[in-house]
Amino acid sequence: MNFKKLSIIIPAYNESGTILKILEKVMEVELTNGIEKEIIVIDDRSKDDTLAKVKDFQSKQTGCNLQIIEHERNQGKGAAIHSGIREANGDYLIIQDADLEYDPQEYNQLIVPVLQINADVVYGSRFAGGNPHRILFFWHSLGNRMLTFFCNLFSNLNLTDMECCYKLIRTEIAKKLNLKEKRFGCDPEITIKLSRVPDIVIYEVGVSYYGRTYAQGKKINWRDGLRVVYTILKYGLRVG
View 1 (cartoon, rainbow, N blue to C red):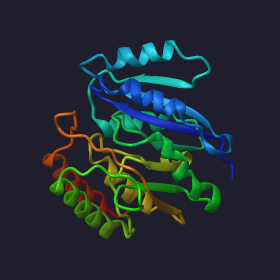
View 2: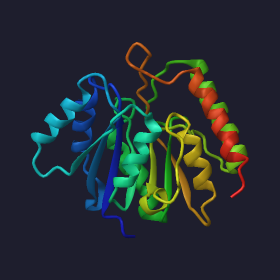
View 3: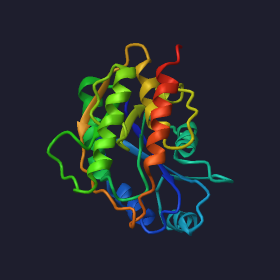
View 4: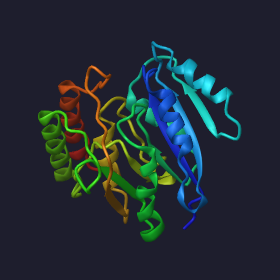
């Protein structure tokens, strides 16, 4: 298994309150088997001082492989992920939200199926395993499960959490997906397009979830859920 470097893609938009903490957490992670880290922060034209904080953090680090991508205009999380994938040089890449809802210390849990079973893709799941999960919104949780079920119908996968942030993907596969969705429709698009890669090996592991409230900066809402439904239909019904 040739897994020497992990590219960590961090989309960021108005995350001034948490961006430094998540960067510190990512830096602290010691990956198994001596795997190196490449950190790619994509600032999606933040209106606060997110970008300034990332640049200051970068200037104070030594031996840190941290790259910053600046979008000239706000395009959405999906577009930020596209930019990160284009610049990724690792053997695998993982998506890391800039808030504190997911713990980077769990990267190694997602890496296990790669090292042991040669998995091409490993999804995290907030609904599987015995990890801690903050109790928040019933309807939000139900919506996630329904969207995952709907996506599974078209992808013929049996995922439990299609919208989980943590998706560990072989980089050469990610670069060939030809992703189009620029906002929250990126999750079902990635999932459906991955499901159509010949002979792909996909696993899922349970991860912790330290969810935040809307008052704490959570951005996704019911309109984004409708976009996800549209995206599932758009790519699920497309042939080829």
